[in-house]
Length: 422
Image (cartoon, rainbow, N blue to C red):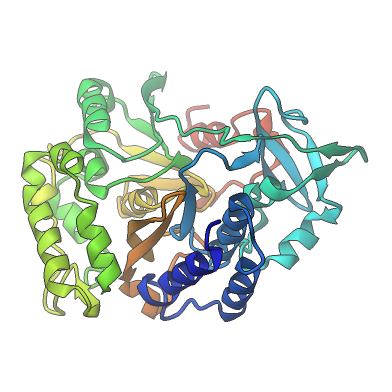
């Protein structure tokens, strides 16, 4: 039988010593409860759920658990909160409820009661709250009709599907959708192939409402469309003295260096070889030093990304750009939205992004049956009260989620209207 107490103690130690937010985000009561519960657990699914809720209590989606066995079952429909109810937004063929169904209770508890019982887990804004972890362990939901429905669980039923799309919506408006920045080639090739459309169309809608992040470098091919030239891009940064500190513990140094597998190294473009060399050198030199300033390393420096910038062609189009965002856009997706807001062409519409870049540059600790993700870097804006954890990158035009979103694409319609396309 697994020693779940030892596993729980090691995971708790990550949150207390290795996690980049360990200095300001502490959960002593939740930690004590997690360790006490681990002593009573005798099966993996129960431990997995307890760990998921414990890590979720930190309010940082960069701190998470991922199953490796394929035995953890999940609820086979997803939901989103509006007022005091949940609305079904996604279903599988075997789901016991229909798309659009209204849920008023989980295991007999009203939605506000569920949120109150796990206050640290949920974002304050109802439309940002994620309920899948609770539905995973729940037995029933109550519909607005009064019907009590037994839940059906399946192996993870919502695999991430990468999607890169460029198309023309109207003669004067193009549309670009990106669901991640995991690798450079798909997006770079798409942008190159569609350069004639993008560079001659006055309006552009960039849809990152669902974006799982990846590497910031991989969206640099879009800078040419966001900024007139290199000078405008460089001057647009409102906080050029921001920096990162890395919590260079022994564990993080080992895991970070191990993440540079031969496959990963091979996937990097040759021009990014310098980045790899610098990254390896940093962790080798600073292991066991704790928080070490980096990017830039000293007060007198500014972060220099010159090596990764594309050629700017001073394009006349697009003239106006709308970013569509939502809470399902995070990590490098957050960074991309922040970058877009620096452009005078861009208006961000929809709902705030996830907001996980205060603590970033994550590593995985592999425990065999599961892995734990945690961030190693801390952004200096946290000290100035500019952090976005639990808030996301703020939009310029907020479009509240309502049940109408389940019937039509409200956000896209509002974006077209904003651009005077309708």
